Image 1 (cartoon, rainbow, N blue to C red):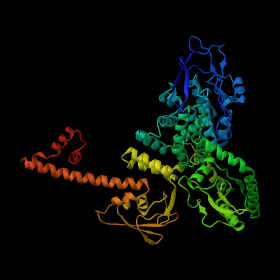
Image 2: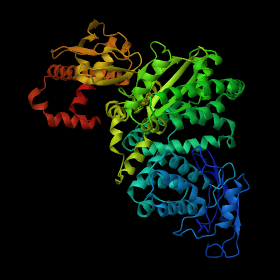
Image 3: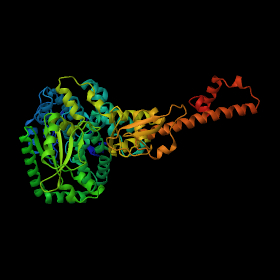
Image 4: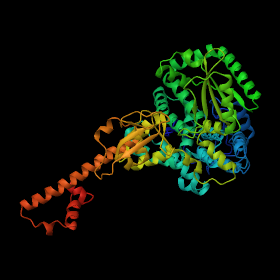
Length: 621
């Protein structure tokens, strides 16, 4: 059949080939096998070759497979699979996805996933990706990534349907009738995110709305991240400028967002894929160096893990001891930012120790420090003081058998799942308890960063200001300081007592006149360090407020926004008073009756004539 080729505006810049007929009933649907790394091998979907006068597939029409590279197992499955799209049976091509999903959600409704897949296959019929693969392979791959993360059934259904609204004639109303409001809200959120050009400041207001929607239900961003991950895996089919644009966007915005949500497995792969696209020569050089150093590093790692395992076993601590993988982009960052040699970075062996309980974590730490010499100043307790993205672990560095440092991470299995999958792990926990998921689980309240997003969007009058704050916060490292009562306050590195004061409360910030850090009086521009206990002194005067100098040393977006708002409000109030005086003086000069003419109705009428919002705006104009 004849088809027209036109751009779809897909996130990966793919071009869709579509027949002139409305979506035909697909007599078979297929997709890729699940991959153990959370992705999907390329696959194919069967599409009708010929249709009769009614637009239905003719009985002798047969099937066509994309000529793009596809897995042989997928082709074999598709050849055997010949069920109608409305079938209530689970197709073979969905079996890997459903099997992965049921590892975390044993009671998951496979028929619902089948129905979502069939709907997507029907509407995407005749569409192809830039690679030449049928388009349905993409939503199936995205759903597979999410299944490996342990996401709930609702999220997987939304993933299968996530491109139907933007790229087909399927409507939100139809989707709401077919799959309910929750799936529709997620798909609508992802569709709107797809339309946002993250690097374009002109779209700042749209970005603000989308980020706020994500903060209310982070599954929107989780789907978006899985969508981008699969598109990054298949990026080579796009023109070079488009590849670089997507890679830069991924490295600057999406990978840091994955980090903020604690989704480190996604973050690491996004970073490495983007790094390889933007800096191919550096990527290949580091890859080559890794290959050269791998044998000796593996030997050292084996020696260390065996010794640690023996020490823990002797102490009757049940533990799993493994090596930690090194990621190319993180190695590159350390070489560039810290100016260190590759050998110093890559030869630094990392060991991960997984145990059952928190008590075992501290017991294991005691065993490690008793048998290995600790490096002073390198111990961090993220169990007692979790990171912003719920990450928990004990970190320590000891001197290894060759005299070189060995980094150790000690955590429970539950902490490890959160460290790897972040916010996604909490949908897994919630559904395991047998409760019905409606919206985000209560655990999301633990993620202070998401609450900060909602605060910022309410406080930032200028959308560009919100975007700048978001960009800064995504790239910033954090210090953790304490209130006198022991509450933990995370702040950007380099923050001052004034940043701390505004983090506690706006009025505390405005009326701040002094600070005590660890019992000592310090200047307000002093830099805070991890573990500092901060006490703020405030003025009781009604006229107390910040000074313009503060804008020169505060680091947090919240403090900067609040200080600017204070002075904007102050200037407006001064302008209103000056406006009142100017009007009164002008009327007196003309001999006009003030009391009769300066009524609220008259002033409001003048304001409306001048297209001003209210009388205050008239005075300030």
